[in-house]
Length: 516
Image (cartoon, rainbow, N blue to C red; front, side, top):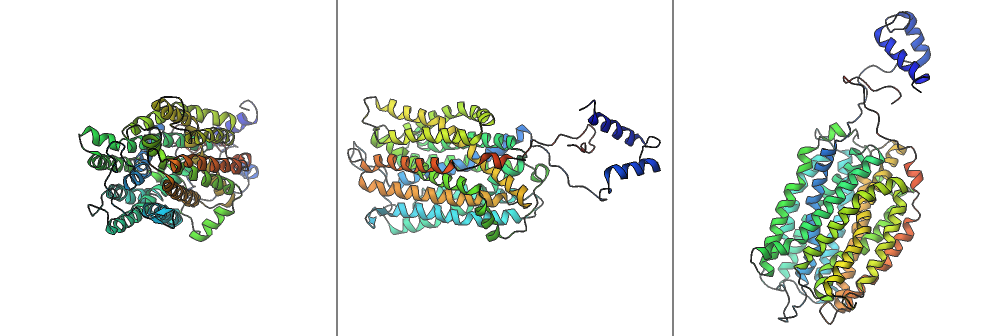
């Protein structure tokens, strides 16, 4: 092409720039030939700028924010139900923590902690579209997303720590009221941060490859945040504190570290420089309706709902699998989660490369299928003719491969869907896509937490563990449902027309070539 039409065009542009006789812009002949060849002249005034590509170092700094908020959600997912529904210690016959909320059943299955955990996530889901709509329409000198990150980071960390601090020293309805209030505020502030944060994946990544890279980095930091959350009891144990004091100290340390991480992208990312998205003029209800009507979004979000339902059951049950089914000390939780995360790290980059070669859909479906085996094996933990440590670490190792893939690709796929929707409609409503996904995934997580807590009524202690074992089979059923639904996603149609990043301009800061 350089020797043919492309080379002739380049030579013509060089002659045009020099003002060559008969062909430059200064001569009448040049003006006539230019007009005849190119048609009407472009409008005067500044042209829309191309956003700069986000450098690799900035991509990593953006991902640090996810380490912060995932540590907070990890504390709630791994520790909160365990703290307020403590199993009985085998040696002492007493609960591992004091009982702070009534343990009585409601409707024979539910309990106070179940209801609070479920309503908290549902409230979180309801606020997602509201925050997304406000963020999509914001016109601020910092951009559309960064102001929300700045507003939500510190309050989320403080409120997360307060979730573990009952106001009354024993079982009391006041503790229930306090937990409900703090949880409501926590999830609202967390939504202020998380929904705009995810929206930036579509806006800072200008091609499917760039969005895949961003999704890979935030998956790594999500795993690190989960490891940090699981280390809370061990941090307290290292200080020589008892179980309750150690958990409180560990939670406080993790929340402080999380707050610092959440403000790294606020300081490091100039949103106006790296994103060209403009404030949307569509109302919240209309934007949500358009997302739901997107034929590519519906199978994605339905499968995502089923996956998060199953995942919430398993993540909530992890401390019980460790202490009740295989009968190891709770301080092993850090080692188990750390091993899972470390092994997942080994597969994050291969997942990135394999997705480029085989496609994201095919890799996600293979990972869901492998995860079904993990769910099934949970039922048999403690019964297998293997040492307890081999069983729990082996299960974690097996789960590391599908969790690595499912940590990287779903956010990248949703970013592709959001970018495709923006190209098709001309409206930048990336925030609403992530909010609609978050709404349904959090409903799925709420249902999963509710189901798990309900299953504990059928046995949650050593020797009386049927409810804990059944959680694996329920996860298996919903994992199968996620696999079946995601098979309907049409990846080829979504990626059609989404090219690579535009070529950079020539040295010296001039405009890019017209072909680019």
